[in-house]
Length: 97
Image (tube, rainbow, N blue to C red; front, top):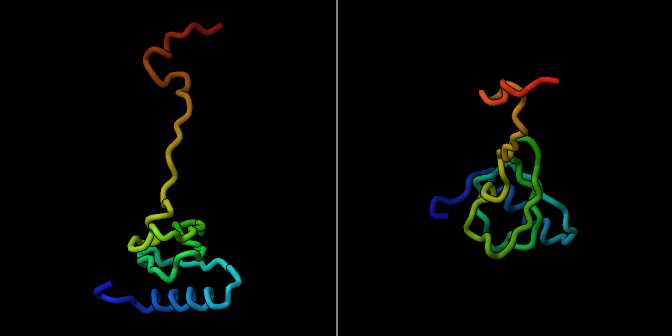
């Protein structure tokens, strides 16, 4: 926080304050992943962009000081399937009926 906030972060923080004041519980969406989580954001729901879609992040007190981007993954975990025929040397010698 020593360097302050840029214009995009200031605008987002104003939206958080406005949303808290109105109390409608509306989800705010942002592309600003490098925004630090401040104490006044606790209890709000924020949609953080991960490059493809917005993922919902519910701000907890333990998150203060971290960045919004830390709580939404940008990459999917890789799920490998079973190897096919011819994938290994041993699968070449399987008798075919």
